[in-house]
Length: 140
Image (cartoon, rainbow, N blue to C red; front, side, top):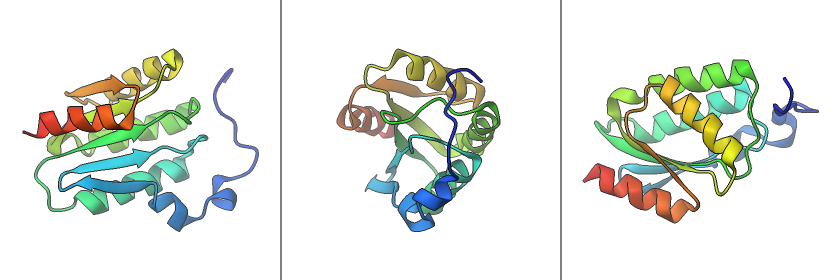
């Protein structure tokens, strides 16, 4: 486990369902923002991706920005679930803009997860605005 995030209390106690759902929002018609929580769990991944799927329902193509600037390394079962949930979006996914700031460890881990999730088009950025711009270009 090493440097993987270890929650001291279930995130359900500190973030309720509505708060988690609000972490996924629409930026533009086919562009969304997912602000990852600091300690990711299977529960938070399910809630965030369920909301992303809800917002993108009916769209043949979309992109999203993932803000990972506050996120810690998730444990192995959570990483596996992330890969599965990303795979479920791939057919409609135009691009993923990953905001990692200057965190080289999170950049490397995110790269492994998106590769394993089969994402064909992704980029790394220091800001949400830069990631959103890359997503917009991919949607053209």
